[in-house]
Image 1 (spheres, rainbow, N blue to C red):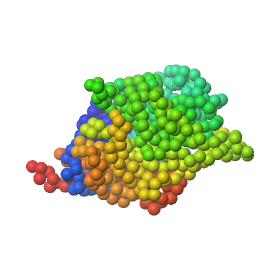
Image 2 (cartoon, rainbow, N blue to C red; image 1 turned 45 degrees about the vertical axis):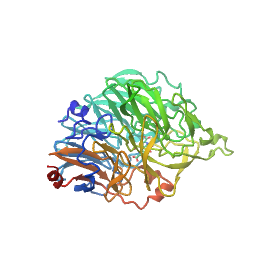
Image 3 (tube, protein in one colour; image 1 turned 90 degrees about the vertical axis):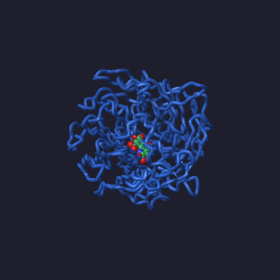
Image 4 (cartoon, helix red, strand yellow; image 1 turned 135 degrees about the vertical axis):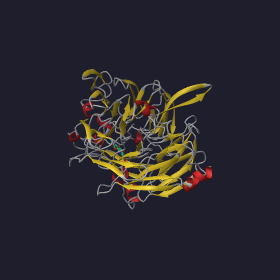
Length: 564
Ligand SMILES: O=C(O)c1cc(C(=O)O)c2c(n1)C(=O)C(=O)c1cc(C(=O)O)[nH]c1-2
């Protein structure tokens, strides 16, 4: 079974992948180097495994590998265990969801957590399920939140010191975001931490302090009671500072004129004590958000040297178009810079990292309109799907660069009146996403976090929606909606490999070593938010076919022979 030590050492141990992010810091870096710029051209698929059925749709999973078995999730809250060597199925689990689930952004799932002999994942009806790794039979099952109120789970949980840590989705339905810890072996809840100011936290069944100290300091009226701030992308963990990093989504509703104030802790990054659920620091990237700039994107701990000193930093590329480097011990802003070409809603960041707004790019107040039905429409960039959305970036300690999957797009956005109703969409906004350039939307960027400089870029016709991985072989892997698994030279950005998987890639690649051979796996299956919410962009990519296949690659045996 998987131990805490296995999980903590995941980035440095190449024989398996036992955490989302390929290490709890989620650098998505593997030291493996047999597959490199010289050899990668020969990478060939060894098997493909179909998730089958009519249930295709978006496949955003990162597979896990332990003791010769792959554990991978698929659309509609399914899990598969597959023999690594042969691609044969060992078991599958189908959560059999109720009819009336309400995921906002496709029926996706991003992966499992492994602990002891358990395979643990979250479902679209907002449950955590722990399965026996050998049989796929349910060992425990817990309700995290009420799916009838709009809650769901799409993120991969993580396990830290024996606790499964999960967030929740539902920001478009006026839920209240939270982060929760469960005993991994029994499923008993240990702590619960709401992410909207004013709500009570719990530790071992006892009250453990109101988030933010009191209600309504940064909200208006009763809006904090349905304030959103969903923790829908899950979190990362840094053992060095013993902190969990979770991002929070947009405040609800989108119409910002209804909720004057900063609306803590929406569109923020939170550092949380994994033992108690207490918030140690917060950094709000978009106070008083009016554009759906969720602050959920992954926070990646990394160290760098400056003037002979080690800086304990963390980086995050926000939907709002800015890349942030923070001091991960206390959340202080070190620097921030745009990582996309076009940002209209803010002129820049001040010394503390707070945006300097361009108020003319905030959608107008419907109350100012003659009929009160629709406020002034503005064209804002980035679009609400963000300069970067959920798809994880990677960090290479070899180059010191972050590899950021990003998109260039803007939107028409306007506000409308709205009121909270349990289980109903709670936006108060309308929108249309539009491309900015004729020939590309996606841009994979190599970014130097010390200078903000873009070192290289690769432009992609369709929006990039898949995760990134970097390796000791000096490569950067990712996939595109056109279907290609691609590898780039980490220093120059030259594309050195591509393979067509037959459907769009919106999952995250992994690599590991078994019996002296380096394997690479990625899930293929187009979907996620773009085809559903992408407006003009969705039209541009409407020809892409759906799918649902895990592909596994390695170098042919003759490489081993040649090496000897
Ligand atoms: O506020 C939320 O609860 C929530 C949840 C999710 C999700 O669970 O995937 C997404 C979003 N928001 C969202 O804003 C968004 O752009 C998005 C894209 C995707 C995707 O998987 O393609 N999910 C989500």
